[in-house]
Length: 218
Image (tube, rainbow, N blue to C red; front, side):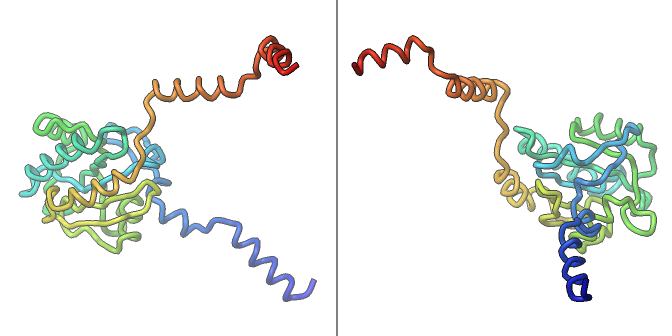
């Protein structure tokens, strides 16, 4: 085989193999630990829109942002097309000093939080969690304080990112636009009806019905 032929074959083979960089650009390929210590694959959120936020319990933005995130989840969470994903972090002003169980209790007791919360992580620096390294790599936006917000689309790609001072009201329309683009899933009842119709349509006609049609034609 000539060098030219070898080079062409090598290029073709390389194009068929997904690169590591391609995998890294997809947020939903990663695994994280939830706030109760369970390993969670973010793959479960594929096909939906997520707002990923680094949260803190003692920040000056805590009350307004938590209330906004709760309201956002309540409004857009219908149909399982959207969720807030909250990652506690203590890197900015030591404003998330508590253990995970206390963080969870704080969020649930004070704000009735129902969206997924995850174990406390670093979001910047050498020890930053791979999930935030991915978000930063995609958006080129590094968190500089608590409550940075990253909007992730159904394909795991970052659509947009906002800093601490961007309120939920400020960014609501952008988030809703992304969520509205995701089709509503069929309910269980709708799925049953659809399947029944498809099965009925594919059933062969009874022989008696076929025979009667033949007599009429004669």
